[in-house]
Amino acid sequence: MPITLLQRKPGRPSWMVGLLVAWGLSVVIGTTTMVKYAYTPGRSATPPLDWPRHAHFQPASPKATLLVFVHPQCPCSRATLEELARIMVLRNRVEGRVYFLEPAGTRWPKTDLYESASRIPGVRVFSDPNGGIAQQFGARTSGQSLLYDAGGHLVFSGGITAGRGHVGANDGLESVLALLSGDTPRHRTAPVFGCALYGDD
Image (tube, rainbow, N blue to C red; front, side, top):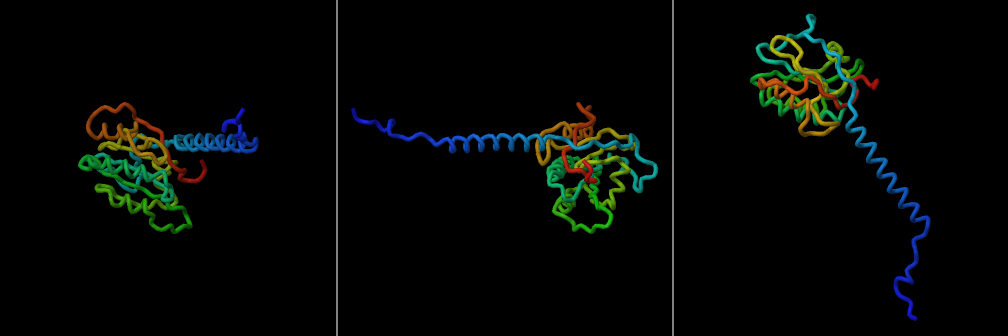
């Protein structure tokens, strides 16, 4: 009886099967870890409910004021700035102020994030030496956004992205747009996805 091709085909060595299994497991574990990280929020802010009396600047009355705190070396915050640009289409109703952390004793160059923020119409960009402004407003995570109405009352606190570095529809963005359009938002808070501003998270 002739030997068929199927009969002559040698089986895979056990070491090769083990290697394939190990590779598959590493892919699954790596993907799971990345997804978990992307959707794990940072620490939320504990902002004052009313504009601080001793703040070195005043809210942008009669407009609302949107404060965004960013770590200049946080790649996740690129998405925050993209979403901020969408919000600033309504710049006749809001002034945007972006504060970039500048730790004491450092002289970081102005990163591409800083330049990107500077190009958004209606947004003013500032350095925040030693995170003084961020601390005054209770911000702990890069991407933290605070919306104060024209009377200086906090109406939204949270992030405006769907995840770390993810652009797209999300509760924070939709809430800010609703508030600026005079509508009632579904949420007044949203998780913040970004790097720690102070390196302690």
